[in-house]
Length: 150
Image 1 (tube, rainbow, N blue to C red):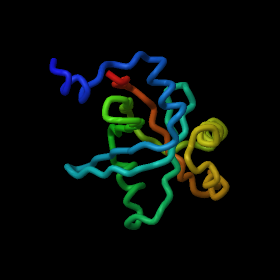
Image 2 (image 1 turned 90 degrees about the vertical axis):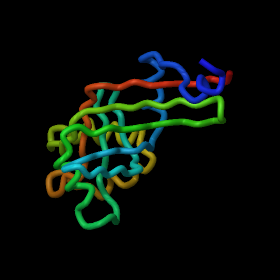
Image 3 (image 1 turned 180 degrees about the vertical axis):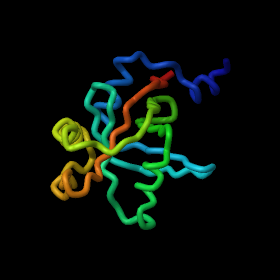
Image 4 (image 1 turned 135 degrees about the vertical axis):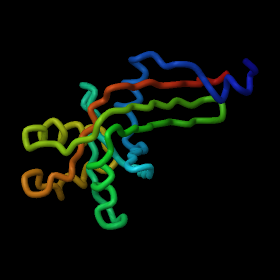
């Protein structure tokens, strides 16, 4: 493998480094797909270290587009990354089903979002009983790659 391709590809991250990046990053890209059409959104998230990611689906996109895709997506993927330079970067991809949380999930979701999300202040707008806009991705697979300087 040439030096250039090794910089592009990096190497596999150990599980502990994958968890560390999910804990430290507050923003990533959630990708959803339905009926041959895909939709990716930058989004703040919470991670509970029990293989669940939490998202608050709010914003000003096309009416209901995020929720429509979330409801119809069988398997979503979520990407987080951190790039320091051309030769120092790391990324994690997690996949799994998306579901609205239930009121019994709320406390765990709220804690995870408050600890990790880029905009935890948005949680004050959520009434989980009236309008549960918080969704969870139950991680079925996750992996990461890293390039650490060489």
